[in-house]
Image (cartoon, rainbow, N blue to C red; front, side, top):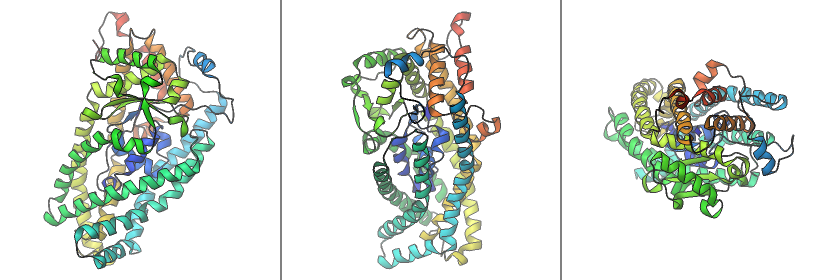
Length: 476
């Protein structure tokens, strides 16, 4: 039920577009945890647009022995009346939340600071000089400059990402070994370089061709590019980071149950498009989601989900994810976010012109279409996107609430007491995700892309139009 919440932060996120692919291997990590990772945050703006993932579930064997599946199933069916945590888990959740809150402020400005240093220390202009000395062809220059710039930007973030990995391992939220983690970082960097080079070349071509309207043409190009990555992600990107197999070969009974929910939703998803993912090799989270569009659309259920949740709870999580598709949240979200980016691109264009007029000489930038000017465009958009965070998160929270409601409606009559099942699902996910039990409303408003889990449990328990003789809003 965790969407990864946003869409590409297009000059820098387009530059770092391939970072979104790495988020495929952490699908399901809560926004609070994912925000600890510099790459995870950058990736989230794009992946959330199409890859709506459930919050993660963990056990903490360092503190409490792992329960066998039968015992866990019994515990997960206890009646829930509100979101509560055991004292030990409560303290850990609050501590983790405080760290996350501080890093949500720190990381955007850390990234902006890195970009500022590439200008102040003359790295960007040196990368430009080396690229132009190597070849007079713009494409080759783009490859050289982009590779150097992206490496200089991402390497200083690697220690932060490593610290995050250490923290998540300490809290037993992930089990991925360091060698596997480093290999994922290498694959991510390769993708960043390939895609980033293409996008940077396209950006500066637009600036050269139309110095006054490049921001509009670049914004326009972001629409089909986003749709393209939504399509190819489950086919090309996700398998680079995780193992997928037909769900039918692992849990035929679950396939039958999912098909009942799919049929009630009025969708057509054949068993051949339902996949099992080996998430337990890296994380202790649980997740079930729908991803892709058109010919790439598919259902994915993690092995940890099958092990740690009951079938009715999986169906609710899955029903929530289908809600994003049936209610058109992907096209609606893209449309709203593209409208926002239209405004941000224009503001960024005006601000970057002013900055370049004042600082070009000091930073050895020859013109707006100089490769060395890239950190200016990227830094300004990063700042604008940080300011716009409450807007994008507010939209995401609204969509997530609608998906919660859809999940309740589509499973009503399929699972007994669907409201209680949903509340149990939220409680489990909150416990194992270590979701903050007492966040401030200001913090939720600014940084949370999902409603607080306590509010979601309350809604699940209270939403019951059928007992009042009314019909459901979304699923008739």
